[in-house]
Amino acid sequence: MEENTFLKLLQRRRSVRRYRRQAVEAEKVALILESARLAPSACNQQPWHIVTVNRPPLIRELAQCAPFGTRINKWMADAPLVFVLCAHPHPLVHQAAQWIDKDCHRLDVAIAGEHMSLMATELGLGTCWIGWFSHKKIRRLLHIPDTYNILALLVAGYPGEGIRLDEPVDHDLRRKRLAEIVSWNAFGETNPPDQPR
Image (tube, rainbow, N blue to C red):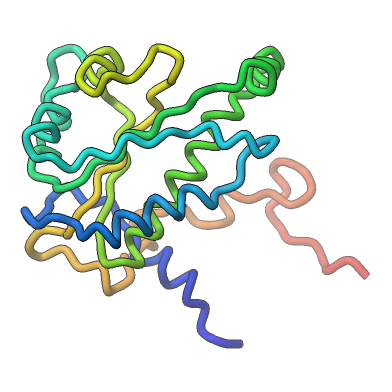
């Protein structure tokens, strides 16, 4: 079996919270955005809209948009690039899904965002997902219409000193074992069955 390059990419991806003050080339930003465009979505609605922020003063303001006056996101002030992942739920498809307790548009945007994160890793960039922020402050700062939900921020850039993306992370130290997260054919059945004939 050939070496699985995609698995190796997954093993290299890590959350980066320290960045060099180096702009990300326009070609790389375009590839990251294209990777989101190619993502699948419920009923092919493609509900995402991505506000790409690359102006340092604006990123510093975004870093202040934490909830309840906290400074939890202050580390992102020096990042060169932030993608604000928004969703515009379809009035029929997504509203109907919410009636049966399914937030498809959130899942759709998460898939697009993970495409972006993996593409960034492939391009030698670090990323970090942010889910704790003040929606109201970001909406006002970036003029995002009320009809769009702000679901996440994806910070990206060249990793700071000492952070390497060319080597696998030792996930054995930080991830649960497969036996802890996988069941076979019924919840709690941890032994894989024989292959079906």
